Length: 174
Image (cartoon, rainbow, N blue to C red; front, side, top):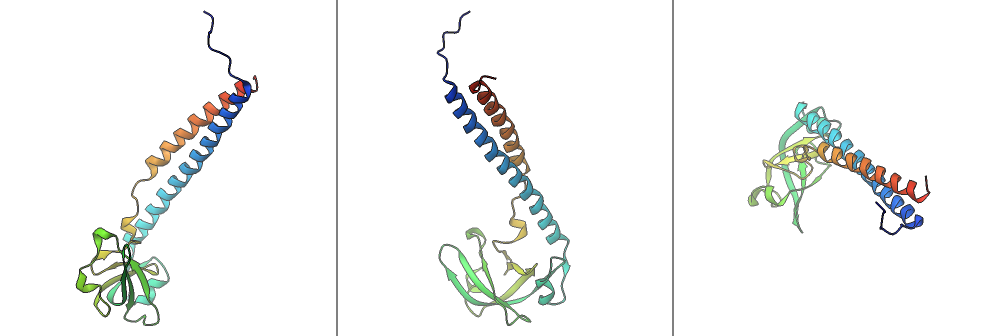
């Protein structure tokens, strides 16, 4: 049987090959990033859950081995898109912490006005909970499984690289 399709110009095959290889590189970078973030986030969540209680808030500033839970005072409150609070812990009067809350997880309205006091949780130098609500940087709010996405992009990398190399080979006549 004779092939009736017109021949494709070699330069087009080279360009298609280059574009496909570029996609492959982008997929590889995304895959490596997602797999790295999966394991990093799992380590952060594990460290958070395995931390013990700190005796003072200053102990919770220097590492992830302990969590301090104690009274925190709202110094400033503002809302642009999200609720943002500046908090000060008893025992750390020279330092304030800025926290933001997701819209669906804000504390009660009476606990966010300046001067209000509620329990806050300090871990690894940052506030992770205030008035029973998790702040935006809470380790429990980290994505739980990025490994599937990393594997998906790794497969995409292999496919795009294969197609790109095949197209480039045909363009160079090899």
